[in-house]
Image 1 (cartoon, helix red, strand yellow):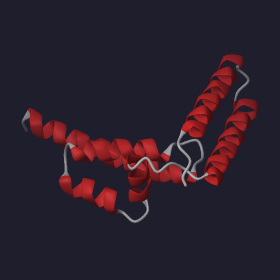
Image 2 (image 1 turned 90 degrees about the vertical axis):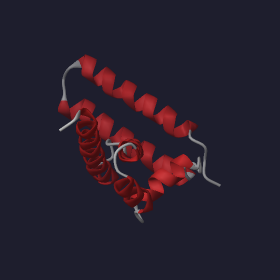
Image 3 (image 1 turned 45 degrees about the vertical axis):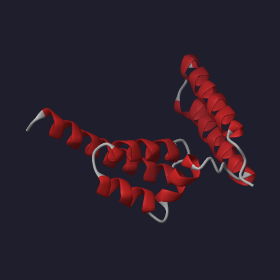
Length: 125
Protein backbone atom coordinates (compact mmCIF):
# COMPACT_ATOMS: atom_id res chain seq x y z
CA UNK A 1 0.00 0.00 0.00
CA UNK A 2 1.41 3.35 -0.96
CA UNK A 3 1.52 6.40 1.29
CA UNK A 4 -1.42 8.12 -0.43
CA UNK A 5 -3.77 5.15 0.09
CA UNK A 6 -2.64 4.81 3.70
CA UNK A 7 -3.47 8.46 4.37
CA UNK A 8 -6.85 8.02 2.65
CA UNK A 9 -7.75 5.03 4.83
CA UNK A 10 -6.54 6.77 7.98
CA UNK A 11 -8.72 9.78 7.16
CA UNK A 12 -11.71 7.51 6.52
CA UNK A 13 -11.11 5.76 9.85
CA UNK A 14 -10.78 9.11 11.65
CA UNK A 15 -13.97 10.33 9.96
CA UNK A 16 -15.92 7.24 10.99
CA UNK A 17 -14.59 7.50 14.54
CA UNK A 18 -15.45 11.21 14.72
CA UNK A 19 -18.92 10.55 13.35
CA UNK A 20 -19.52 7.84 15.95
CA UNK A 21 -18.36 10.14 18.76
CA UNK A 22 -20.51 12.95 17.34
CA UNK A 23 -23.58 10.72 17.40
CA UNK A 24 -22.81 9.73 20.99
CA UNK A 25 -22.43 13.46 21.71
CA UNK A 26 -26.07 14.02 20.79
CA UNK A 27 -26.99 12.03 23.91
CA UNK A 28 -24.00 12.76 26.18
CA UNK A 29 -23.96 16.42 27.20
CA UNK A 30 -20.20 16.86 27.65
CA UNK A 31 -19.26 15.40 24.26
CA UNK A 32 -19.41 18.12 21.58
CA UNK A 33 -21.43 16.97 18.58
CA UNK A 34 -20.85 19.72 16.04
CA UNK A 35 -17.03 19.91 16.23
CA UNK A 36 -16.78 16.12 15.91
CA UNK A 37 -19.09 16.09 12.89
CA UNK A 38 -17.12 18.97 11.34
CA UNK A 39 -13.93 16.97 11.86
CA UNK A 40 -15.57 13.95 10.24
CA UNK A 41 -16.70 16.07 7.29
CA UNK A 42 -13.17 17.44 6.86
CA UNK A 43 -11.70 13.92 6.95
CA UNK A 44 -14.24 12.62 4.44
CA UNK A 45 -13.81 15.68 2.21
CA UNK A 46 -10.14 14.74 1.81
CA UNK A 47 -10.67 11.00 1.47
CA UNK A 48 -14.12 9.94 0.25
CA UNK A 49 -16.64 11.95 -1.75
CA UNK A 50 -19.27 9.25 -1.10
CA UNK A 51 -18.91 9.40 2.70
CA UNK A 52 -18.75 13.20 2.70
CA UNK A 53 -21.93 13.46 0.65
CA UNK A 54 -23.68 10.88 2.83
CA UNK A 55 -22.74 12.80 5.98
CA UNK A 56 -23.77 16.27 4.84
CA UNK A 57 -27.01 14.93 3.31
CA UNK A 58 -27.92 12.87 6.38
CA UNK A 59 -31.31 14.05 7.64
CA UNK A 60 -30.12 14.45 11.26
CA UNK A 61 -26.33 14.77 11.21
CA UNK A 62 -26.19 16.97 8.13
CA UNK A 63 -28.19 19.69 9.90
CA UNK A 64 -25.41 20.21 12.46
CA UNK A 65 -22.83 20.70 9.73
CA UNK A 66 -25.01 22.85 7.46
CA UNK A 67 -26.08 25.18 10.27
CA UNK A 68 -22.47 25.72 11.31
CA UNK A 69 -21.17 26.18 7.78
CA UNK A 70 -24.03 28.56 6.89
CA UNK A 71 -23.40 30.51 10.12
CA UNK A 72 -27.07 30.17 11.02
CA UNK A 73 -26.38 30.17 14.72
CA UNK A 74 -28.14 28.52 17.63
CA UNK A 75 -31.57 29.37 19.05
CA UNK A 76 -31.48 30.97 22.52
CA UNK A 77 -33.41 28.09 24.11
CA UNK A 78 -30.85 25.59 22.79
CA UNK A 79 -28.01 27.77 24.13
CA UNK A 80 -29.63 27.87 27.57
CA UNK A 81 -30.30 24.14 27.53
CA UNK A 82 -26.73 23.37 26.42
CA UNK A 83 -25.15 25.59 29.06
CA UNK A 84 -27.42 24.16 31.77
CA UNK A 85 -26.56 20.57 30.85
CA UNK A 86 -22.88 21.47 30.53
CA UNK A 87 -22.73 22.99 34.01
CA UNK A 88 -24.77 20.18 35.57
CA UNK A 89 -22.36 17.63 34.14
CA UNK A 90 -19.21 19.57 34.98
CA UNK A 91 -20.25 20.41 38.52
CA UNK A 92 -21.42 16.87 39.27
CA UNK A 93 -18.11 15.56 37.93
CA UNK A 94 -16.12 18.11 39.95
CA UNK A 95 -17.99 17.26 43.14
CA UNK A 96 -18.54 13.50 42.85
CA UNK A 97 -15.90 12.17 40.45
CA UNK A 98 -12.72 13.70 41.83
CA UNK A 99 -11.24 15.06 45.01
CA UNK A 100 -8.26 16.68 43.28
CA UNK A 101 -8.40 20.47 43.40
CA UNK A 102 -6.41 20.94 40.16
CA UNK A 103 -8.89 18.73 38.27
CA UNK A 104 -11.87 20.58 39.71
CA UNK A 105 -10.33 23.89 38.62
CA UNK A 106 -9.65 22.46 35.15
CA UNK A 107 -13.25 21.24 34.80
CA UNK A 108 -14.68 24.60 35.82
CA UNK A 109 -12.25 26.39 33.48
CA UNK A 110 -13.39 24.18 30.60
CA UNK A 111 -17.03 24.87 31.46
CA UNK A 112 -16.39 28.62 31.48
CA UNK A 113 -14.60 28.47 28.11
CA UNK A 114 -17.31 26.35 26.49
CA UNK A 115 -20.05 28.56 27.95
CA UNK A 116 -18.38 31.67 26.51
CA UNK A 117 -18.07 29.97 23.14
CA UNK A 118 -21.76 28.99 23.14
CA UNK A 119 -22.85 32.47 24.22
CA UNK A 120 -20.77 34.12 21.48
CA UNK A 121 -22.23 31.98 18.70
CA UNK A 122 -24.67 34.06 16.70
CA UNK A 123 -28.26 33.48 17.77
CA UNK A 124 -30.59 31.98 15.24
CA UNK A 125 -33.31 34.31 13.99
